[in-house]
Image 1 (cartoon, rainbow, N blue to C red):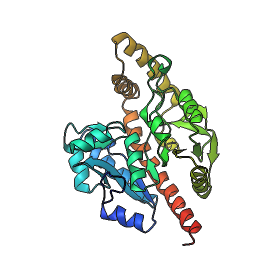
Image 2: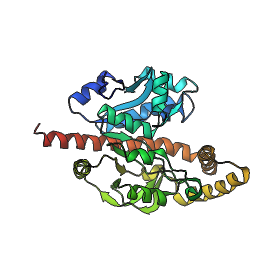
Image 3: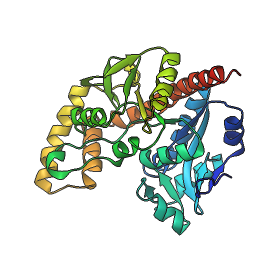
Image 4: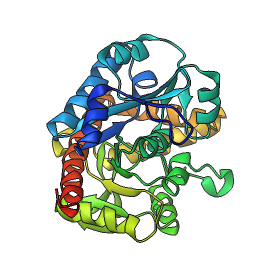
Length: 314
């Protein structure tokens, strides 16, 4: 256990030893277990994501909240319990103090996971997709807390961009305004979750893992206390055509407006519409992108750990 910040952080033995030895560790969110697929598919997916991190050469550290503590690393029994219990709350960074104070269970999102990862001393986090600026945000001010948290947490975030239900152009504009680096790993474009491209070019493309490791450390050495975003597209055989998805979203947005669906309910509404329009292919692609991001994060975390060791003369 570590509590130097005043917040109890409890590690599994595997994660604690890996960090002590300077090995690569990748943090993962637990929200995909509790608010993703139904049981038992959610538990199976969580294990596949952890296996993908290991395939990349790193140690997975799925993060959750329990008994007033941040738990860094989940056992197989923990995953099974979180996957099967109903009504475990979804915990974003704004909810963390309340859930920790109450002492109950909590499943971490992207925003709360990067907070926890930094507290735990884990420089890498992987997620299939980040939140962003919502369509129509000029009127609603609906901007994901993920983007805000990236301006505050020193963590390298590996993802497949963000879902096309968002305004991805404005999402990139926001990241630029906040000076959060966005690097596409072995791709020219900013991906859109299970679509290989959002139609927007990435600000930077880097293919060399060691160069990415140096860029991450240079970002923080320059005095920045923000995240470093690395995107990696889903494999071509698992991808869904972006035009097909965008057409489904535009139709669903019109239907949502007609039906009075708004606020937090809109995301689930649009995702279900896309799933229906793609005959369920988007759900399968969702699982594929989780694994592909996790495997890439494992490789990049290994390169970063090697860079730190070389710099330290180990």
